[in-house]
Length: 421
Image (tube, rainbow, N blue to C red; front, top):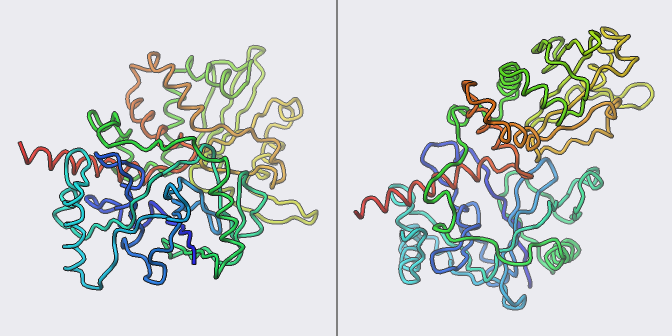
């Protein structure tokens, strides 16, 4: 029997506790000897049925119901040999811990010159290492695994699995050539595809800049767990956009693509439920309007089918509002509609009535503009906090939990180093 495992990463309320580290943080790092070790969620153990049958592990994370995004693959140099399993559960926690700590010490598995077993001391001695991998290779472009057939056409570079459900509570899913032959072959085809980086790009912990001067872009909003709050972010956008009108005018011209925008404008928050509504006097003293819907991790709200089979939503609601309140401007194409969203929040506007009226603007575009114009914002209070929270949402995937893990992991390493001095 041959087995491929989907290992779901970066989930669980466990990570919200101040000192907890997701043990899978090691999966995307080399140890100081240059070896890659894999921790299999949720306990480090695999079902004994699959002992010594695992050919590869796909590291994935949840996107939405029935959809996983692939982060990386872990495998052996030779497919036939598969992954080297280094942990076999004995159903005796004390014995398991002894075996793990001995294996870590015997093989000098260190990160930042600290034994892995020591990094997790003070309550973290349950750490497990499941496999040693010859290679951990990340994807070079977003790749998705889909179980929900209705979403097959929503994502590019997607692989459809239908023999085994993506259980919402399971952090690992086994696919074998014996029990799920079609799904297994689909995963094998993905593993053998050209969608991967050309080489192992994981680094030793000491090779990353954050180890020496850690800057995770964790600002005040992250500390109070408001970095994903759309209301807070919309308020922050309003504040920043008002703070330096000349900078915002350039943002509208260069990022939003509105050439005749004037610096005399008024921003309304939650006017008729619109996140940001901007009224401006252009150079001919005729009003123009910008309507912005800000999304972070949520999708489009208020979906319903009308009598014509079209999907009405908050998007059509705001267009209808503009038609009524700004009829003359709307008829002259002087009302512009935008959706601000993180790069990882894929919203298919084609699914909605009037979706073609909206232009998507990625958080990375907003970040790039304001980062390049930071010198013009030096006197604006909270501008750094604005850049910090925007930066969190500029990745092609939602890395919030991974960043939290990495920061705690590095902190524990530094604490252990300090104790030796």
